[in-house]
Picture (cartoon, rainbow, N blue to C red):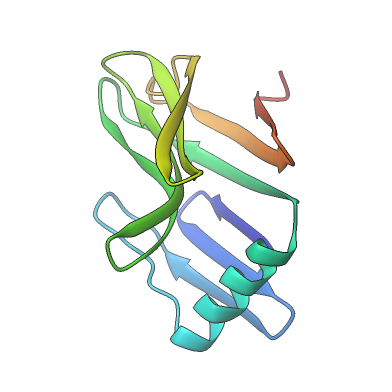
Length: 130
């Protein structure tokens, strides 16, 4: 399974489906229920995964880069705060919401490549290959 944004498109790739969606400031991609279930099943059975994206964020803006949620429950999300110049990873562990914060100025109007890897209890964030 691969999920990433590339300039103005979001590509969702799973074993049974490849779909691309135009992305803009107000876009939220909602997958069909079959694909959502497949994605959630893959995440439940895997202790590791990687999310990759090429993004451009306006100066001083904030927003969620990537989120997997079902109704009101968020499994995890990656967000960027231009005002605080940080990237936050929010997740649930043992019934409590947790957050990890990385100081980084992503909201600078430039294109950036990000890769977030989760493996067991380890989290690795690369921005522009650093």
